[in-house]
Length: 331
Image (cartoon, rainbow, N blue to C red; front, side):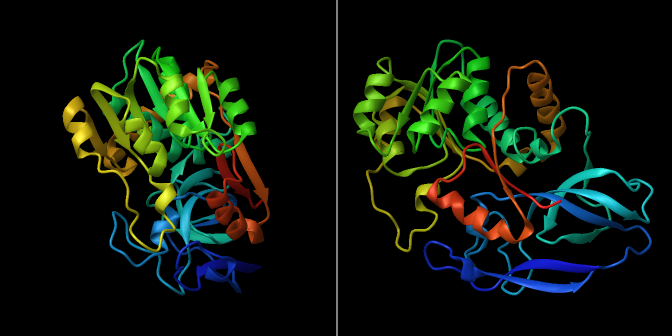
Protein backbone atom coordinates (compact mmCIF):
# COMPACT_ATOMS: atom_id res chain seq x y z
CA UNK A 1 0.00 0.00 0.00
CA UNK A 2 1.13 3.52 -0.77
CA UNK A 3 1.38 5.94 2.11
CA UNK A 4 1.13 9.74 1.96
CA UNK A 5 2.72 12.27 4.29
CA UNK A 6 2.36 16.06 4.54
CA UNK A 7 5.61 17.77 5.45
CA UNK A 8 6.51 21.40 6.18
CA UNK A 9 8.04 22.65 2.93
CA UNK A 10 9.07 26.09 4.20
CA UNK A 11 8.45 28.47 7.07
CA UNK A 12 5.76 31.09 6.42
CA UNK A 13 6.22 34.83 6.63
CA UNK A 14 2.87 36.24 7.70
CA UNK A 15 -0.23 34.27 6.71
CA UNK A 16 0.65 30.67 5.69
CA UNK A 17 -0.13 29.54 2.16
CA UNK A 18 -0.49 26.20 0.40
CA UNK A 19 3.17 26.47 -0.68
CA UNK A 20 4.22 25.75 2.92
CA UNK A 21 2.99 22.14 2.56
CA UNK A 22 4.40 19.29 0.49
CA UNK A 23 2.93 15.84 -0.10
CA UNK A 24 5.30 12.88 -0.15
CA UNK A 25 4.58 9.28 -1.12
CA UNK A 26 6.23 6.17 0.33
CA UNK A 27 5.58 2.53 1.05
CA UNK A 28 3.33 1.86 4.03
CA UNK A 29 5.48 0.58 6.91
CA UNK A 30 4.92 -2.67 8.77
CA UNK A 31 4.92 -2.89 12.58
CA UNK A 32 7.82 -4.49 14.40
CA UNK A 33 7.58 -6.05 17.86
CA UNK A 34 5.75 -3.70 20.24
CA UNK A 35 4.42 -1.51 17.44
CA UNK A 36 1.05 -0.91 15.80
CA UNK A 37 0.12 0.27 12.33
CA UNK A 38 -2.49 3.02 12.48
CA UNK A 39 -4.88 4.10 9.75
CA UNK A 40 -5.76 7.77 10.11
CA UNK A 41 -9.49 8.45 10.35
CA UNK A 42 -9.75 12.06 11.54
CA UNK A 43 -7.16 14.84 11.71
CA UNK A 44 -7.43 17.92 13.93
CA UNK A 45 -6.30 21.30 12.60
CA UNK A 46 -5.71 23.91 15.31
CA UNK A 47 -4.53 27.54 15.46
CA UNK A 48 -1.58 26.73 17.77
CA UNK A 49 0.04 24.86 14.88
CA UNK A 50 0.81 28.21 13.24
CA UNK A 51 3.31 28.89 16.03
CA UNK A 52 5.02 25.57 15.42
CA UNK A 53 5.57 26.51 11.77
CA UNK A 54 7.90 29.25 13.00
CA UNK A 55 11.41 28.62 14.27
CA UNK A 56 10.84 30.92 17.25
CA UNK A 57 11.25 29.46 20.73
CA UNK A 58 7.93 28.53 22.32
CA UNK A 59 6.35 26.10 24.77
CA UNK A 60 6.62 23.28 22.22
CA UNK A 61 9.31 22.47 19.66
CA UNK A 62 8.75 23.86 16.16
CA UNK A 63 8.01 21.67 13.17
CA UNK A 64 11.16 20.97 11.19
CA UNK A 65 11.34 21.89 7.51
CA UNK A 66 11.17 18.72 5.43
CA UNK A 67 9.67 16.70 8.28
CA UNK A 68 6.03 15.64 8.82
CA UNK A 69 3.59 18.01 10.46
CA UNK A 70 1.84 16.43 13.42
CA UNK A 71 -1.19 17.04 15.61
CA UNK A 72 -4.24 15.41 17.10
CA UNK A 73 -5.37 12.33 15.18
CA UNK A 74 -8.03 9.68 15.67
CA UNK A 75 -6.86 6.43 14.10
CA UNK A 76 -7.74 2.76 13.83
CA UNK A 77 -5.30 -0.04 14.66
CA UNK A 78 -5.07 -2.14 11.47
CA UNK A 79 -2.02 -4.25 12.37
CA UNK A 80 -0.69 -4.88 15.85
CA UNK A 81 2.37 -6.28 17.54
CA UNK A 82 1.31 -4.68 20.83
CA UNK A 83 -1.18 -6.46 23.11
CA UNK A 84 -2.40 -3.18 24.61
CA UNK A 85 -3.76 -2.09 21.22
CA UNK A 86 -5.47 -4.97 19.42
CA UNK A 87 -6.57 -4.73 15.80
CA UNK A 88 -9.79 -2.77 15.53
CA UNK A 89 -9.04 -0.47 18.47
CA UNK A 90 -9.73 3.23 18.01
CA UNK A 91 -7.10 5.53 19.46
CA UNK A 92 -6.31 9.22 19.77
CA UNK A 93 -2.86 10.74 19.98
CA UNK A 94 -0.42 13.24 18.59
CA UNK A 95 0.53 11.71 15.26
CA UNK A 96 2.02 12.80 11.93
CA UNK A 97 -0.17 13.93 9.05
CA UNK A 98 0.02 10.58 7.28
CA UNK A 99 -2.52 8.12 5.94
CA UNK A 100 -0.74 5.35 7.86
CA UNK A 101 1.69 5.68 10.75
CA UNK A 102 3.62 3.46 13.14
CA UNK A 103 3.50 3.82 16.92
CA UNK A 104 4.96 2.00 19.89
CA UNK A 105 1.87 2.98 21.88
CA UNK A 106 3.50 5.86 23.79
CA UNK A 107 1.06 8.77 23.96
CA UNK A 108 -1.82 6.77 22.48
CA UNK A 109 -5.13 6.49 24.30
CA UNK A 110 -7.85 4.04 23.40
CA UNK A 111 -11.21 5.76 23.11
CA UNK A 112 -14.74 4.35 23.31
CA UNK A 113 -16.82 4.26 20.16
CA UNK A 114 -20.22 4.08 21.86
CA UNK A 115 -20.28 7.27 23.97
CA UNK A 116 -19.96 9.96 21.30
CA UNK A 117 -18.72 10.38 17.72
CA UNK A 118 -15.03 9.49 17.84
CA UNK A 119 -14.11 12.84 16.26
CA UNK A 120 -15.38 14.52 19.46
CA UNK A 121 -12.20 13.25 21.15
CA UNK A 122 -10.36 15.82 19.03
CA UNK A 123 -12.79 18.55 20.10
CA UNK A 124 -15.30 18.87 22.90
CA UNK A 125 -14.04 15.70 24.66
CA UNK A 126 -10.41 16.21 23.69
CA UNK A 127 -7.71 18.86 23.84
CA UNK A 128 -9.94 21.89 23.06
CA UNK A 129 -12.56 20.79 25.59
CA UNK A 130 -9.87 20.26 28.22
CA UNK A 131 -8.40 23.68 27.44
CA UNK A 132 -11.81 25.21 28.13
CA UNK A 133 -12.34 23.10 31.25
CA UNK A 134 -9.08 23.92 33.02
CA UNK A 135 -8.78 27.49 31.77
CA UNK A 136 -12.25 28.48 32.88
CA UNK A 137 -12.71 26.42 36.04
CA UNK A 138 -9.16 26.53 37.42
CA UNK A 139 -8.04 30.00 36.36
CA UNK A 140 -11.23 32.07 36.02
CA UNK A 141 -13.06 30.23 38.82
CA UNK A 142 -16.46 31.66 37.84
CA UNK A 143 -19.20 32.06 40.41
CA UNK A 144 -22.94 31.95 39.83
CA UNK A 145 -24.26 35.33 38.79
CA UNK A 146 -20.94 36.64 37.47
CA UNK A 147 -20.43 37.91 33.92
CA UNK A 148 -18.08 35.89 31.71
CA UNK A 149 -16.81 37.09 28.31
CA UNK A 150 -15.34 34.68 25.76
CA UNK A 151 -13.54 35.87 22.62
CA UNK A 152 -13.40 33.52 19.65
CA UNK A 153 -16.54 32.04 21.18
CA UNK A 154 -17.63 30.06 18.13
CA UNK A 155 -14.31 28.21 17.93
CA UNK A 156 -13.49 24.78 19.30
CA UNK A 157 -12.42 26.10 22.71
CA UNK A 158 -14.70 29.11 23.00
CA UNK A 159 -17.95 27.26 22.42
CA UNK A 160 -17.11 24.91 25.30
CA UNK A 161 -16.05 27.75 27.60
CA UNK A 162 -19.39 29.47 27.15
CA UNK A 163 -21.38 26.33 27.87
CA UNK A 164 -19.31 25.53 30.95
CA UNK A 165 -19.86 29.06 32.22
CA UNK A 166 -23.61 28.59 31.81
CA UNK A 167 -23.40 25.31 33.74
CA UNK A 168 -21.78 27.36 36.53
CA UNK A 169 -24.74 29.77 36.53
CA UNK A 170 -23.00 32.73 34.89
CA UNK A 171 -24.12 35.40 32.45
CA UNK A 172 -22.15 34.68 29.27
CA UNK A 173 -21.16 37.01 26.43
CA UNK A 174 -19.35 35.75 23.34
CA UNK A 175 -17.71 37.45 20.39
CA UNK A 176 -17.56 35.91 16.92
CA UNK A 177 -16.95 36.98 13.33
CA UNK A 178 -20.26 36.47 11.51
CA UNK A 179 -24.00 36.75 12.05
CA UNK A 180 -24.30 32.99 11.53
CA UNK A 181 -21.85 32.34 14.35
CA UNK A 182 -23.65 34.81 16.58
CA UNK A 183 -26.91 32.93 15.95
CA UNK A 184 -25.19 29.64 16.78
CA UNK A 185 -23.92 31.02 20.10
CA UNK A 186 -27.47 32.03 21.01
CA UNK A 187 -28.56 28.45 20.27
CA UNK A 188 -25.90 27.23 22.72
CA UNK A 189 -27.40 29.42 25.44
CA UNK A 190 -25.09 32.44 25.39
CA UNK A 191 -26.90 35.42 26.89
CA UNK A 192 -25.34 37.85 24.43
CA UNK A 193 -23.28 37.38 21.27
CA UNK A 194 -21.52 40.13 19.32
CA UNK A 195 -20.32 40.18 15.71
CA UNK A 196 -17.04 42.04 16.20
CA UNK A 197 -16.73 42.64 12.45
CA UNK A 198 -19.90 44.73 12.24
CA UNK A 199 -20.27 46.17 15.76
CA UNK A 200 -18.30 48.83 17.59
CA UNK A 201 -16.83 46.28 19.96
CA UNK A 202 -16.25 48.69 22.87
CA UNK A 203 -19.80 50.02 22.73
CA UNK A 204 -21.34 46.58 22.19
CA UNK A 205 -19.49 45.05 25.15
CA UNK A 206 -20.40 47.94 27.42
CA UNK A 207 -24.08 47.52 26.48
CA UNK A 208 -23.96 43.74 26.94
CA UNK A 209 -22.15 43.92 30.30
CA UNK A 210 -23.71 46.86 32.20
CA UNK A 211 -22.50 45.39 35.51
CA UNK A 212 -18.95 44.95 34.23
CA UNK A 213 -16.92 41.81 33.52
CA UNK A 214 -15.79 39.34 36.17
CA UNK A 215 -14.11 36.68 34.00
CA UNK A 216 -12.55 36.88 30.56
CA UNK A 217 -11.41 33.88 28.53
CA UNK A 218 -9.09 35.34 25.90
CA UNK A 219 -8.62 33.36 22.68
CA UNK A 220 -8.06 36.33 20.38
CA UNK A 221 -6.26 39.35 21.86
CA UNK A 222 -6.20 42.63 19.93
CA UNK A 223 -9.01 45.19 19.99
CA UNK A 224 -11.51 42.86 21.66
CA UNK A 225 -9.20 42.34 24.63
CA UNK A 226 -8.47 46.08 24.82
CA UNK A 227 -12.22 46.73 25.11
CA UNK A 228 -12.70 44.05 27.76
CA UNK A 229 -10.00 45.55 30.00
CA UNK A 230 -11.95 48.80 30.20
CA UNK A 231 -14.90 46.92 31.74
CA UNK A 232 -13.14 44.72 34.31
CA UNK A 233 -14.64 44.50 37.76
CA UNK A 234 -12.66 44.41 41.00
CA UNK A 235 -10.76 41.12 41.31
CA UNK A 236 -11.62 40.03 37.76
CA UNK A 237 -9.87 36.90 36.47
CA UNK A 238 -8.47 36.51 32.95
CA UNK A 239 -7.41 33.21 31.36
CA UNK A 240 -4.99 33.93 28.52
CA UNK A 241 -5.43 31.00 26.14
CA UNK A 242 -4.68 32.32 22.65
CA UNK A 243 -3.88 35.41 20.59
CA UNK A 244 -5.01 34.40 17.12
CA UNK A 245 -5.34 38.03 16.02
CA UNK A 246 -1.53 38.31 16.08
CA UNK A 247 -0.39 34.85 14.98
CA UNK A 248 0.38 35.97 11.43
CA UNK A 249 1.76 39.41 12.29
CA UNK A 250 5.14 40.20 10.78
CA UNK A 251 5.74 43.08 13.21
CA UNK A 252 5.03 43.36 16.93
CA UNK A 253 1.57 44.92 17.31
CA UNK A 254 1.32 48.10 19.37
CA UNK A 255 -1.76 48.75 21.48
CA UNK A 256 -2.95 50.03 24.85
CA UNK A 257 -0.86 48.92 27.78
CA UNK A 258 -3.02 46.83 30.15
CA UNK A 259 -0.93 46.96 33.33
CA UNK A 260 -2.61 50.04 34.78
CA UNK A 261 -6.09 48.60 34.28
CA UNK A 262 -5.07 45.32 35.91
CA UNK A 263 -3.56 47.22 38.81
CA UNK A 264 -6.59 49.44 39.43
CA UNK A 265 -8.99 46.47 39.44
CA UNK A 266 -6.70 44.04 41.29
CA UNK A 267 -7.39 41.71 38.36
CA UNK A 268 -5.48 38.48 37.81
CA UNK A 269 -4.13 37.62 34.35
CA UNK A 270 -2.72 34.12 33.83
CA UNK A 271 -1.48 32.52 30.67
CA UNK A 272 -1.68 28.76 30.44
CA UNK A 273 -1.11 25.77 28.18
CA UNK A 274 -3.42 22.77 28.49
CA UNK A 275 -0.43 20.45 28.82
CA UNK A 276 0.21 22.12 32.20
CA UNK A 277 -2.72 20.02 33.40
CA UNK A 278 -1.71 16.75 31.72
CA UNK A 279 -1.89 14.70 34.93
CA UNK A 280 -5.49 15.83 35.42
CA UNK A 281 -6.71 15.13 31.88
CA UNK A 282 -8.63 11.97 32.92
CA UNK A 283 -10.60 14.08 35.41
CA UNK A 284 -11.46 16.60 32.70
CA UNK A 285 -12.43 13.98 30.11
CA UNK A 286 -14.67 12.21 32.63
CA UNK A 287 -16.49 15.40 33.63
CA UNK A 288 -16.90 16.64 30.06
CA UNK A 289 -18.21 13.24 29.00
CA UNK A 290 -20.74 13.27 31.84
CA UNK A 291 -22.01 16.71 30.90
CA UNK A 292 -22.25 15.64 27.26
CA UNK A 293 -24.20 12.50 28.20
CA UNK A 294 -26.55 14.64 30.32
CA UNK A 295 -27.25 16.95 27.38
CA UNK A 296 -25.59 19.93 29.07
CA UNK A 297 -22.80 20.15 26.52
CA UNK A 298 -23.23 20.39 22.77
CA UNK A 299 -20.62 20.22 20.05
CA UNK A 300 -20.27 21.63 16.57
CA UNK A 301 -17.79 20.48 13.94
CA UNK A 302 -16.73 21.83 10.58
CA UNK A 303 -15.73 18.64 8.76
CA UNK A 304 -13.67 18.72 5.57
CA UNK A 305 -13.30 15.44 3.69
CA UNK A 306 -10.12 14.12 2.14
CA UNK A 307 -6.48 13.74 3.20
CA UNK A 308 -5.44 16.17 0.47
CA UNK A 309 -7.67 18.85 2.01
CA UNK A 310 -5.82 19.00 5.36
CA UNK A 311 -3.72 22.09 4.43
CA UNK A 312 -6.80 23.94 3.13
CA UNK A 313 -8.72 23.17 6.32
CA UNK A 314 -5.81 24.48 8.39
CA UNK A 315 -5.52 27.68 6.36
CA UNK A 316 -9.27 28.22 6.74
CA UNK A 317 -8.79 28.71 10.48
CA UNK A 318 -7.28 32.13 9.84
CA UNK A 319 -10.16 33.39 7.72
CA UNK A 320 -12.83 32.17 10.15
CA UNK A 321 -14.24 29.43 7.93
CA UNK A 322 -14.94 27.03 10.80
CA UNK A 323 -17.69 27.01 13.37
CA UNK A 324 -16.72 24.84 16.32
CA UNK A 325 -13.97 22.28 15.85
CA UNK A 326 -12.23 22.07 12.49
CA UNK A 327 -11.78 18.41 11.55
CA UNK A 328 -10.61 16.59 8.43
CA UNK A 329 -12.20 13.20 7.77
CA UNK A 330 -9.62 11.01 6.10
CA UNK A 331 -11.16 7.51 6.28
